[in-house]
Amino acid sequence: MNFQEYVRKNDYKNVLQYFGDISAIPRGSLDNQRISDYLVSFAKAHGLNCVQDSALNVIIYKPATKGYEDHPAVLLQGHMDMVCVKSDDSTHDFTKEGLTLLMDKDEIYADRTTLGGDNGIAVAMTMALLADQSIQHPALEVVITTDEETGMNGAINLDPALFSGTRMMNLDSEEEGTCWCSCAGGMGVDAFIKLNREAMEGEVLTLSVTGLSGGHSGADIHKKKPNATLLLARILSELLESERYSLISLQGGEKGNAIPVKAVAKIVINENADFCKNQIAELFLKHQKRLCNSEPLIEFTQKSLGNTAVSAMTMDSADKLIKALLLAPNGAQTMSGVIPGLVETSLNLGIFTTSESEAEFHYSLRSSVMEDLTFLRKKLQKLFEMIGGTSQYSDRYPAWEYKENSVMQDLYKKLYYEIYGKKAEVTAIHAGLECGIFAEKLKDIDIISIGPDMKSIHTIKERLDAASSIRVYQFIEKMLENL
Image (tube, rainbow, N blue to C red; front, side, top):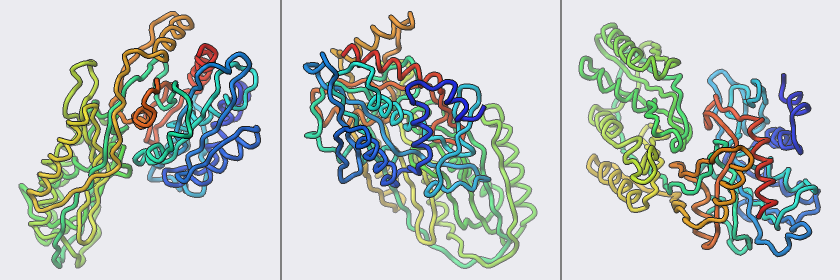
């Protein structure tokens, strides 16, 4: 069954059709104009007041229905941008082409690209709510933000004077039946090491690691998934123990908030080339065996580019680069002492690149304890200073702290039990959510974050459960009717 046929048979109040409509619009992070304008046009077509601010955030206002005029206004919030990742054999152009949506039973996925269920389904749900004249609800303030995936800059630039509501549903979670009530704060750290180079001549090899499962650098960091960049750095370090070579380049990762799934390096060998290639093959085989159970699709390749003259890093520069990659902290650092299994503080090397003169490290740091977040940033700073590098931080966003007395949490738990006959899970998430920014801007706001089942967000394996999306939408209707 293709996507449109599934929609015809299973849609509810056009939720899935709206998701299909926005999936036809290129909307990668930092490419917001078209989707933002589309939402403004949608609001105008439905006779609703809206604001499009300088950051291209869109706020749409829907008046309360009869009998709800005196109820507190409710914010409904999601983000319009998506992470754009594609397979090596995909020719998709995220700047020009919409997504090709496919179905596997009840799961929506895209043809060899990320799907953008995070957070396109929130946009689709809010569109359906805005268009529906049959449900009863308080005044709605729907806010769809820009660039959540690259630092939450849309939310950061929102004017709090645009909102009157004191209750909010963020629709950017990925597990039906789980209500998030707290999230980590975070920041980005960029570090740099200057590289010196020298002329070299010899056989040039390309070494690559591909096929790792990856995942979200917050939600999946506790799963200890291998980071492709760090794995390849380890192999390069181990190779130096038995054979001399010179490093030309190394790069890995595509998105700051995704665990890298592939990395590639170029090296040059000026003697014992056959022996070196055999050593590389042995190292690849060792790590293939080590990771075969947890990463069954991992692939290691080496390819000769022939003999040529190149500009390679000096041994001192390559040594500093490899040491920084191997010694800098990465992954989960501390666990919560309050919520079992919840990561408290972590960092992820999302993107690593080398140019002719510099190596660049792009880290995403997260913590539910802002003091620990600052300490982790200082730890990186001191490490890079020690090897002659520099660092800077940006895109800092606050944690969303747990609220003990919450009308939103209590109503969610009550309705969930009434509808499903079981208790809902109310918990926290290590990933960053825009809820922290809203909580900081709107001091008395009472927030929960909910959403339908999704899998493998930020990867080409991303899946959105369509049936779950409909159930969550219907649950939102019940929430609004009772607020």
